[in-house]
Picture 1: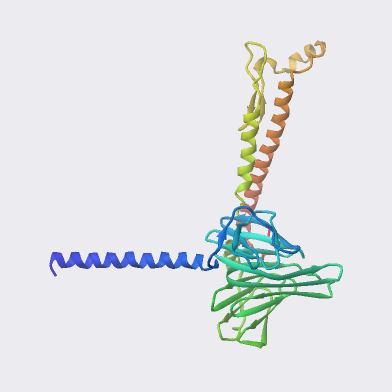
Picture 2 (picture 1 turned 180 degrees about the vertical axis):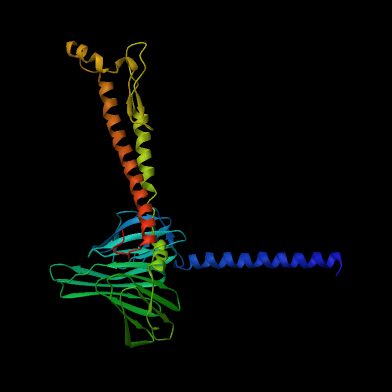
Length: 353
């Protein structure tokens, strides 16, 4: 083959690679957007749905949207927003959300997931709870609170191929258009039926998995191990990045509002040690042990200027913020250490944190 022939082959191969990449990217984008109905409008200002709230948004990471029933308006999910019967929650790529229902159950949606709260009734006076959720696709971890003294307690999740029934459990569902995978975690008992054969229910318990393919009965339950569970849990880890950002923003706000110090000429002004340990004072004002006697003979100091008092109050707020940042850092370090310990002697997961 001549030089021109080899160049033609190279060009053709390069074009095939570009075409494959384009198709793959297009499919991923289409998959993400296919979760949203046609004609959807995105609005920034949240408006409540109809009826009483059935739950509340907890932590949010990335792009997460709420769509009320019978509407074509999507609102960005934020912490503490109320949820209503008929609401649809959708997470885009790298988006995650954790929310709670009024009965105390906690649900965590991984990226590229769509979940509908079809029905959620919780009446503690009548000892009754009934929830029915629809899951089109994605990954969701369900921590369903066990209500032992309730007369009626049902919690069901329907996917494209199965229905999962539970009264109080911790489990994960991974769903697509033609396949459902249900994994039971600690202290869990589930009843799973295939839409192709609802008269033949299957049961799984702690650390078992079952798969329901489209048009088929549930597979036999298989055991899963702690290492695989830890890998699955990573999909539901939510990083509330706004916490540290809010603390630092408060420090900057305090620093900007600090009034100028009007002290005697020649003295250094008081400085707020945002990065350090509070207030720095002039060296000559430091009290040495050998000068304690002189302090006792001093006359009472005159009232401090209002600007100095204000500075001290603000410095106290700044120290509180710094303590908050240090607490966040300590919690993070403890979680990192806890993960290292779990790798050696990994316990099975309990209620989502």
